[in-house]
Length: 138
Image 1 (cartoon, rainbow, N blue to C red):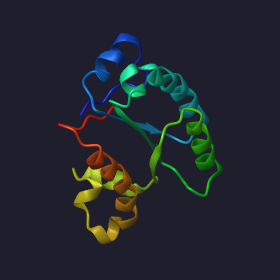
Image 2: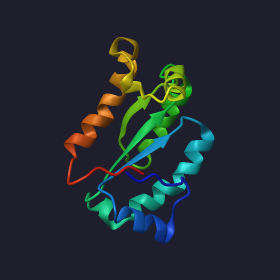
Image 3: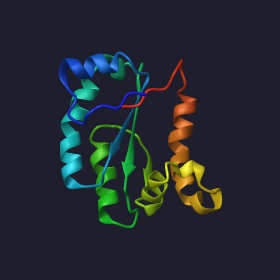
Image 4: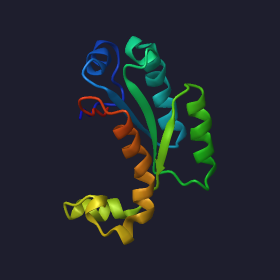
């Protein structure tokens, strides 16, 4: 797993991409986050390994309220780049509460986290279905 800064570009981006099989890009449904991501997406689709589908790329919407207009704006924004929106993760205090206890969402009782686990499942399925030797996330 590799975590990188949002502004990664140029030789550093190309070098990081040589080390991965998967790229998961978290994006908030905010005008600022989408604006900041646009340049990265443009650079990403220029990379030969991504154009030839040697590296799998997907987007995860973070802190998304599906009833808000911003959720649709995020979907429309991603269509420009032909990037799949795998899933949207809601904003919930469960993450704050669990991290304070040194736990993850998956350490909590399933009955308490059912909705959140369902939101994570498409990402987990995607990683497994696109499995190569290892999984890498940017």
